[in-house]
Image (cartoon, rainbow, N blue to C red):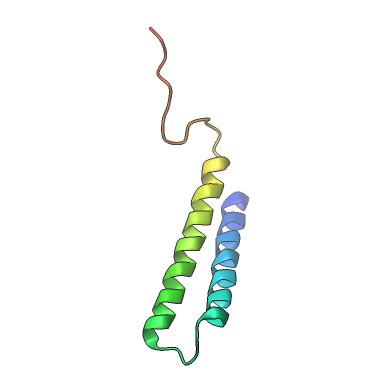
Length: 71
């Protein structure tokens, strides 16, 4: 449970950092579509970070592929 909460807050932190950074970088005045792009990129960054962290922290050595046992 504690690990899930930490991962959730980590993903939220990455989302906020990316969203704040993109809001500063985007030229003013911003339209509604610009806010959509900022939110989409921040969401992809947060989910990508979550995927990488869960992939590297998995107990198995192969995340996608498992070696077959020799007969």
